[in-house]
Length: 546
Image (cartoon, rainbow, N blue to C red):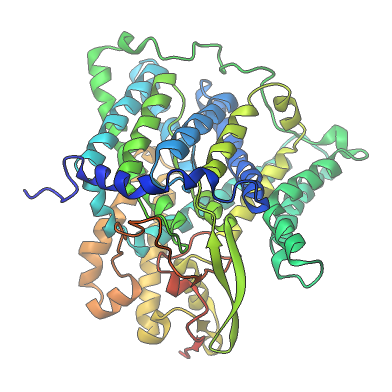
C-alpha cells in the first residue's frame, strides 16, 4: 500500500509552515473594524440559537446534557480551534447530526444497561485518537473526493433538518394547552423573526441611507430581529403568555454530576471496547461534516490558504477535551461556517458583460471573531447573562432556524437544479455552466439521484438506525466515484460534478495576495459551490427550453 504524500505528520507540518507567517496578522487584521465587530455578534446569535435548541432536545432525551453542557462545549471547542487550527474561519459547535448521534448512543447504553456518560466519554476519546491518527497519516488528502454531489446533498439535508426543527417547534404550540390567541402569538413571533431577518439582510441592496448604514443593518439583521421581537413579546398581554427560553439559574450540570468523567474505568472492559463503534461513527461523521464545513467556509476568495490536516488534528484535541468533560463533541457548522466568512467580506459593485455584479473587494481573515463568538457562548452560562437570555421567546429561535434554512437554499447547486426541474420549460434560466453544456434530461436525472439521497438519509435519522446515518452520508462519496460513472457519460459528469482542487499550496507567502474575484450572491451563498466562478454573475444568463 502506498501511503499519501502527507503521511508521517508531513501534511500537518506543511500546513503549519504555510500558516505560520500569517499568525500575527490573524490577530491584527481588521481589529476594531465595524464589520468584524458585527461578525462577532452575528455569529454568536446564529450559533447560540441552534445550541440552545439542540440542548433542550438532548436534555429531554438523555437527562444528562443540557444548555450549560452544550454552550460550554461550543465555547471550549471554538476557542481552542480559533487559536490553534490552521483555518480559523470555520465555526465549530454542536450540530444536529451530533445531537441525533448522542441520543442514539444514550439509547444504546440504556439497552445494554451501562452508564451513559462514561460510555459517551470513551466514545469521544476513541474518536479523538482516530482524528489525530487520520491527520498524522495524511488521509485528509482523500477529501478531494468529497465533491459537489456530496457537499450539496449534505447541505440540503442540513437545511431540511433546520427547516423541520423550526417548523416543528412552531407547530408544537398548536398542540399545547394554550388558547388560540396565544398559539397565534407564538406563530407571529416566529414568522416575524424569520421575515424581519430576511428583510433586513437585504439592506445592503437598499437605496436609502448611506453605504455604511446599509451594510451595518445587513450585518446585524438576525441580531436586530431577535431584539425587536423580544421587545414586542414584552408588550401588553404578550408578556404573560409567551414561552421563553428555559435556562438554568446557575452554572451547573443538568443532574449535578461532577464535570470531569472520573468514573471512566467503572465500565466493564467489554463496554469500553464497544465504545470503539460509536467512536468510529463519530469519526466518519466528522470526516465528512467538518471538512465540508471547512471547504464551504473557504469558497470565498481568501489569501492565507487552507490547512485540512492541521485542522483535523486540532479537532481531535477538541474532542478529547469534550470527552473528558462528558459534554457533546463539536465540529464545523453549516451554514454558520460559510456565513462567518461571508460576514467578513467587503463587497463592491462591478460590471461583467454589461451586468452589474457584486465583487469581493477583500475579506478580513483573522482569528478573533471566531474566538470571541465562542467566548460569548460560554459567558451566557453565567449570571447575569443567563437571566437576560431567559427573556428571549423560544419562538424567536424557531424563526431563526427557518431563516437560516431558507437563506441557505439559493446558493446550493442541488436546490438551483431542483428549481429548474419544477420551472416552466420556457422560463428556465441559469448562470451555471452545466446548463448550457449538458442536456437538461441529464441534469434532471442527476438532480433526482441527489434528492433521493436526501430523502433516504433524512428518513434514516427518524428510525432506530439513526446512529448509523453518518455511514449513509459517507456512502455518498462511493455513489459519486463508483456508481454515477456507470450511469452518466464521463464528460457530462465532469461538468456537473468535477473533482476539487484543495489548493494546498495557496498563500505560501504572506506577501502574495489574490486579486479580487467576483463573489457569490451575498444573499444566497450560505451553501455554495467551491468553484467561485460558478457562483458569480460573470457568465451570461442562459435560457434552455425543454
